[in-house]
Length: 367
Ligand code: PEP
Ligand code: MN
Image (cartoon, rainbow, N blue to C red):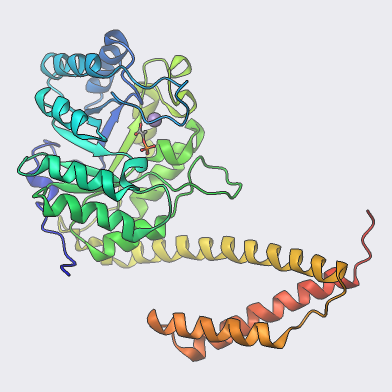
């Protein structure tokens, strides 16, 4: 099975004329009215924007939410494209959307997270785009599954889409986190390592869910070598019909962008990800995720301890530990992790779990 993507480099997409990093895609979550879209676009253009985003069809959890203005909004985009000399893009999720978007002269399409999660929808979209020369960006699927994201890319690529990129917008999680969507940077990095030529954008707006967190997330993306940012911007965020909390006025978007440090690549070649600083950044991110995972594991261990206490069960169950370790070693070998390393690591983790359960057992709980 072919495990590569046949890609046209971003500098040949004719979308970002000055090729200034970070490549910016900005605009409102949704196109709500001509006036809202036009006034936002005018301000964004003043700051140098070349690619305007606006949701025309909005995939919303509830049918009672604002679901976008549809075809009418395409007319506004078309008009603004000409008036302000901007490129325009929107999210598409089915054949009907694609047909309308292509007729309206959209310059780029993106696939939303709920759509990239569904292989049937992705195949329909790919079939529909067969033979069409248009750049497509694919957001990560809602669940943390790299193979699903890759699958979506392969379907489009096999249909002839070679101007292909990705957008990391975070993943759904049951965990309590400060963000709207969990930024699993390591998954985006793994994708980039497998396909070094694929342009990668971050969508800090949908990761954050709140304006205040967008700056740090944008910097993190640049630190990791992301080429671009897709940021939601609205002329009057507080009155937005969707995602009001996470949109920035064009003015605050540009102030934020001015604070960002663009890491030098030293070369125009995407090879820069192998640069030592960036690798260290990646390690830092992975380490902090490791810590978070260890924290969750210890919480569960203590919970198990409480059950064992309640049902008067001994803490150490040798057969459970043996089976667990055996499974870890088998899985680890498939990932090139040595038995010696995993035995050492998991013995320490196991011992810490036993200690935590012992603490639970010896503590007299007042309830
Ligand atoms: C959007 O970009 O407006 C959007 C709906 O994004 P996502 O697919 O990331 O939820
Ligand atoms: Mn949105």
